[in-house]
Image 1 (spheres, rainbow, N blue to C red):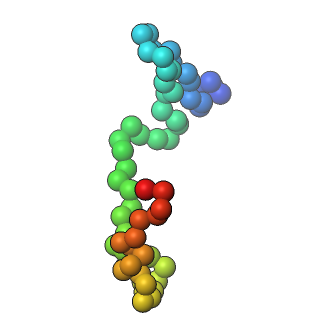
Image 2 (spheres, rainbow, N blue to C red; image 1 turned 90 degrees about the vertical axis):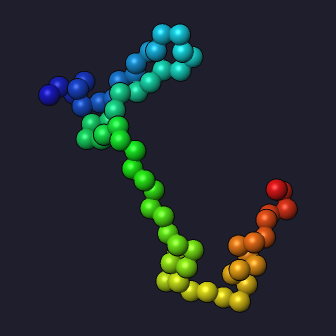
Length: 62
């Protein structure tokens, strides 16, 4: 395998404003689901008296 085969290449797509990259070596095109955590699992499941309120509140810029 040459050094050109081990790198991603830019593929120009006709009629598109954006180019595409070939898949990186050692990867697949299949999406991997993100790790989902329950709200109570993060950071050792420590909870405090204001946790429920903090989850309900929206920042002022929303």
